[in-house]
Amino acid sequence: LAGIAQPLADALKLFIKELVLPNMSNRLMYSMVPMVSLSVALFIWVLLPSSKSYSYVLYGVLLFFCISALNSYFTILAGWSSNSKYSFLGGMRAAAQAISYEVTLMLILISPVLLAKTTAWDMVVKSFPTFLFSPFLGMIWYV
Image (cartoon, rainbow, N blue to C red):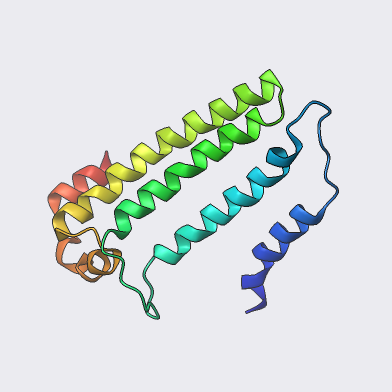
């Protein structure tokens, strides 16, 4: 149980450490964007089904795609808020890389959604054994 709290304690330690602000930066945005980005990233875990799930989100997979795409904007905002062209270019590069990974993730996740004929995470997970050995799915995951 103590190992579960370790990543959260590390994140808290990083946020509490000394805040170094560049001279010409937008101070409020520069300090708030990482916290908001972490909050959005942690919110994705609410959507994933578990054995103790009490909520049923009808469009959970689509909401997962939309919320995970928001982090690309926060990466761009983090670079832009420092008012440095190199930081902004680095943020744009990181966002472009994240978007390219999101496309691959969407292609992998869309095949179980199409085979289950639903966008609810719970129903996709419950119907997983029925299409585990589907040739179409195997081809998508292999490529």
